[in-house]
Image 1 (cartoon, rainbow, N blue to C red):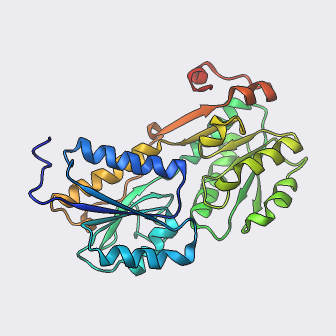
Image 2: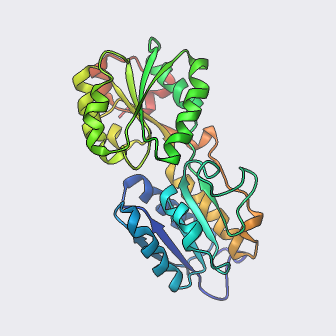
Image 3: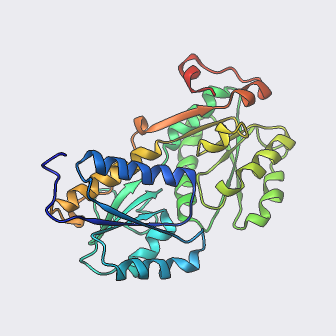
Length: 303
């Protein structure tokens, strides 16, 4: 054990998640593995999730608060936004993980400042890098279709960054607002003939429907890029440029470590992924389907 991290009393970390998802599980795994590497092999983890039901989040957080854990780790923007109101006990620090933009979400004042009892690890995707990657795979691409949820702060944060960087890469964005999963087929279909490819945000509305989005993209004759690797690994979408999810959990663990060593949450700024904290996955069947030439730099990312 790392004696500098050891504690006389066992600690409890309560994990509050929006719903079970492979990417979010990687965050949790990264958190647990990093805590163990830091010598916290006596930590007790509890886990709760609400199966993507927003109206149940306050009830979940009230239950967690009643158990008086040493730290609550909130996963995703909706859970963390609810925690601002539901977890106001100053004796229970809140560390978020997998929140795209905590500033836009109203969780912290700015990127260099924590809230009085909340800070955490952002999973803000590098949109400049994403667009550069899309152009590397599809040099002739000029129009990119992007569905987004106008009621989702995380989607809006990424949309703003796409709009900022698109001109740099010679890309015209075709934005399509979708705030209900039932409207997805019609909205994605509306991109027919207007775009060269589709990019899907790693958001709560779209990720459960990636198979459907991929099928429609196929039908209208364009490849799809995704903000998470799972649909690419299944051969449904062409490629993903995403944050390294275990590293997000490890960043959250680094913050928890500081809290356990006596530092105040308010003194720990939120973290943001660097370009090096991103990874690429490319689907071999999709490469063959669309006749894409993969640059040598990404040869090891094809699967």
